[in-house]
Image (cartoon, rainbow, N blue to C red; front, side):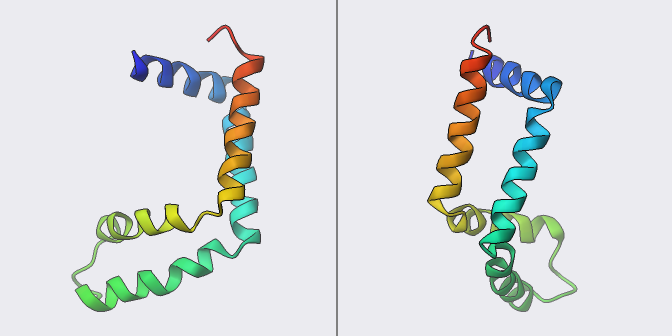
Length: 94
């Protein structure tokens, strides 16, 4: 049931164009707080440990994703969550 609800919400976000606007908002906020720059050093470290020829993009994503999530400022997470909640309140028929 949770998967169905998640799929329905995602579909509604896509249909209304809200998903893309949320992604743009998130991109702008992450750029403003230099989030990408904070991930460069850990990425370089993983590449150095595994070797340039041995590391794949998938390896890098797997290793860096938890750190990337941790580095998103709480204020950005809260604002994004509030925007999603507002959207859901406006589309309560889901």
